[in-house]
Image (cartoon, rainbow, N blue to C red; front, side, top):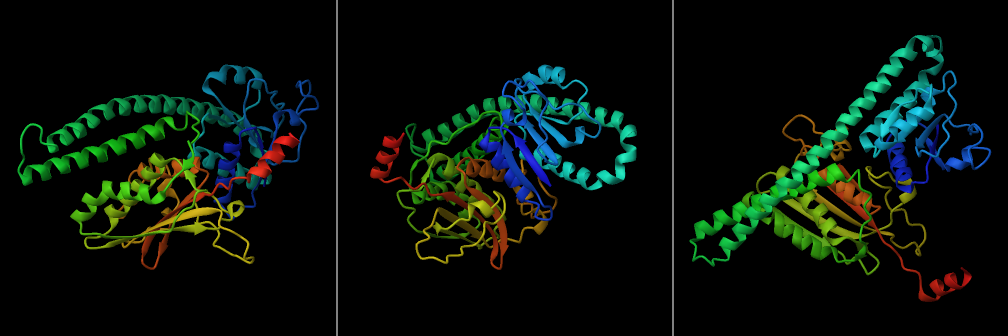
Length: 415
């Protein structure tokens, strides 16, 4: 199935690539095309030129000229539209009855709509004679879906505001616990200190959950660029272990670490990667049995980025040439908990999703969903898999090689 993305947004293209790569049973092919290339002239004086694609995904802009409404045309198009641009879009669309997704589209909704488009393409010959009868039903479904998306955006906005207000008192509680632990108001008994430490740990845990909910709520609406700086993953891990050690000590969980140096070319946002490690380790502690173990490994890794989706294990290293250097750094966190059901290995990273049973690793779709969002913002990859020793969560971060000074100078002179 040939899919064309009419957009200049590279992040949207990468997201679509990842979604299509998750279903290896279908022969998906996606490419981007600029809006002006769909028309005979750049000023949109004529109808779009057909480019032989089975499906078009439009990153709508009010300056675009929409495709003409033709029989059987609606099922070949999906439009991503800003809510504020809906009146203009509906005016320009006329009788074109195509599905609409409000921007920013989530991974889950894009996955659902692209899967539906593929199924319709497979069944198209069998439903040709039913097309006239289904047009009215299709239009009702499109309008209903659009209204539901509007309600969802309103709900998300309300949730973001409520969670933002919720974080302030939690920060205050944690601060008061720290103040009492410093004993400026008088000495404390060891039992009192232990209670305060546990209160502070619980307040910090709730604060992290609130922060995760806030990020998931507003993250889709704000395009954020990571402040990439040279960093030391070992320092991030030390901070993460400091956060989860009380929980691990309560269950007598043994934690082993073996992190190789990342090198000066490993760039990331320290606070964000600390959050990734805390989320994964917190999840591991929760599902590791008492007196169990957690093993943390970090090492340079060659990542076949062109063959890897963001939520599946990347292609293993296949080095045929000695000169092929690592282009990423990989972290594996292995715990001795029960295996994750195979059918949920990918869904546990979805927002606000969970599966039934006592082995639900999704945690309601908070920690792991925010983990994937952060790693994706760093242009990395995160996934889960089962091993003989237990579940393993892994992520890779790309290594950004700097151009030699003489090469940069040559490029500047050429420019």
